[in-house]
Length: 114
Length: 116
Image (tube, rainbow over all chains, first blue to last red; front, side, top):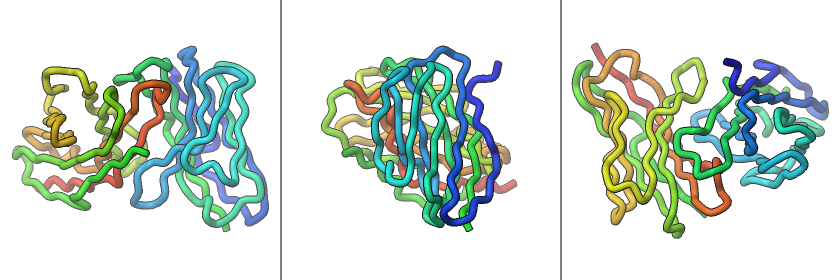
């Protein structure tokens, strides 16, 4: 069972470069999310999606873009990378009802911007 | 906006003893969920326990129990019979009801160290 799969797991970017973090889930979940976790802190929501074609901003969306063309995939785009975007990024998915224990996280993507 | 407070940056416990990790939250939504996650040094987020705001009984999952005091807006995690493998960062999180499914607000975490 794959669950939520994120790639790449580790990446070093230079300031000003762009990249896309990939996220795919095989559970047919409607809801998907991107969180970031800065060192020693809790996770903060960047963007989320309630279904294909629908996305919305979370708490910290600046510097990021998302798209949701299919139920399975929810890529996160970093444009013009900045050192402040050095963080661990987590993708997650859920059924989209009051979630209980049905929020599934990927293993995280460690991004360093130098 | 939601606010989650974990007042204990670090906690120490002896192996086989019980430990309580504190969490208070601030929400105006009558319907919400409370979560605890464990994050070991490898970095993944491991779900531990969930409590719905309308659940009458405190949630339990094996050695984990959630001490839910709704009036005090408190959702403390109790780990019984601590094991060395429990050493990790622990996060409390809330999920509002309504259209906020899966949109979690996290506390800053508590680092738990279990001593042999």
